[in-house]
Amino acid sequence: MKTKAIARPLRVAALLAGCALLAACAAGPKSLYQWESYQAQVYSYLKNDGGDPQKQIATLEEGLEKIRAKGNQAPPGYHAQLGMLYAATGHTDQMVKEFQTEKQLFPESASYMDFLMAKQKKQGA
Image (cartoon, rainbow, N blue to C red):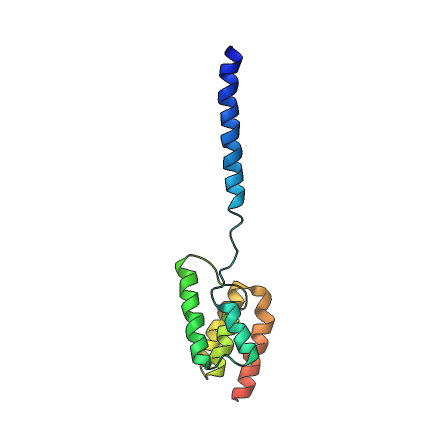
């Protein structure tokens, strides 16, 4: 009789532990980056139907604010895309700032960002 009294709380504890484990697994891993509207903006940009680059800049800047407010990180290419849009609107100082940010956050992009900045210098000269 004593073993029945002990076995029941152990079964309940094991059941609760199993439920807790399943609940923890159901949450899934946290995403490394927060995308906001980045993918849709790049798609529009590449299709050339995005319209006004200023509008795209505003949308991406707004998305960046949301990302930062949540304490998350923008994905690779986000700042590069902003830089490309700033270059299209003639704001080369902002372009350089965004390309430098991209290089700092994602060092593997450094050679491409340097290439784009050199290209912009040649076009501006």
